[in-house]
Image (cartoon, rainbow over all chains, first blue to last red; front, side, top):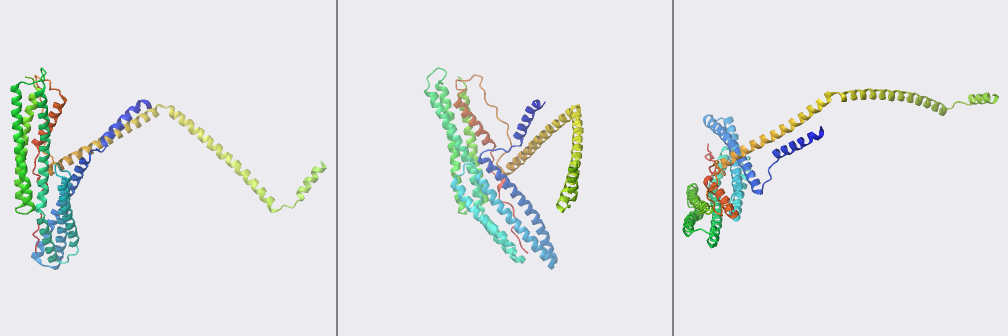
Length: 282
Length: 166
């Protein structure tokens, strides 16, 4: 009886282990998982801030209407809580940006290091500012502290948008590198076919001319895509020099990168046709 | 006979000191203890024999087999429920992660997997491993290029009220 149950138990144990186990993927998966955790915590902080902000608006209105000492004390407490929650949102937003950089594809190590270092400094400033808020004794102090945080946060606009543009640019750069690799592989295969004179292995001149034309079309589209990408460096330079509005520059960068992505998509469509023809006999 | 009577007389004449009385009382105590211990041991053996016979009868009964079967079924059910719970948790986590990824703009809506092209007139390169690898890489890249959304709305700066005034 025991012998007959043993395989069932073994199977069930293995089955349950397979279901309950945690996946052990590469570091990238861990980074992405950590990024999601940080992002979820950031969303929680935003929700907390929204609640504190509503309370602040109510207490502020009561104080402005009644001007009593109790209303003033309530306004002071709720404003302080709201400002602390606001600093928390900013701190966690910077953490999200840092983690998002780690999970980015195609962004260079030096860019990640430079941006992370700046974000670290800004996070430290907001952590200090958050602590400073606890010592505020009057509403005037809090208004002054709030203005300081506002100035600091606005100053970070170029860095924030540089992170976002770098991420998008990195993705397109990754697509381009892979397209280039596939293009070179197909080109090498076509050269090999061209040299092969065996029957069934060689293609007619007409077919090879058609494949060459598609390869050329694909190459031109890849070049156009790269031209679009080259404009991104200029946009990032403008951002760092704070010449223009960061959000507007971000929109332009995304639009340019989307065009670059579309060119790559068209280029891969031609490459697909080439592969299809290689796999088809005349 | 005379000697024996004399010995007895002598023994009676010996003055009874405290040590001898202690030894006597100790002997009496041990005698009493041994008889009691014997009684307890005998009682325990009787009890054990009775219980063992009961156990023997119980083991002989079919109810035990049923009990073991029921216990096994219970264990199987427990393992299955644990496995189900694990699956449910993994499923929930996957949904949560998927939502988080979507909201962060990292993954876009799912698109159907393209059907790979099968020629009705294949060339000698149709099963070439190099060509097949290129085709696979190309299919993956095309799918990613089609799905990718570069604008990450959820990563834009949060909307915060900086206009604090009284």
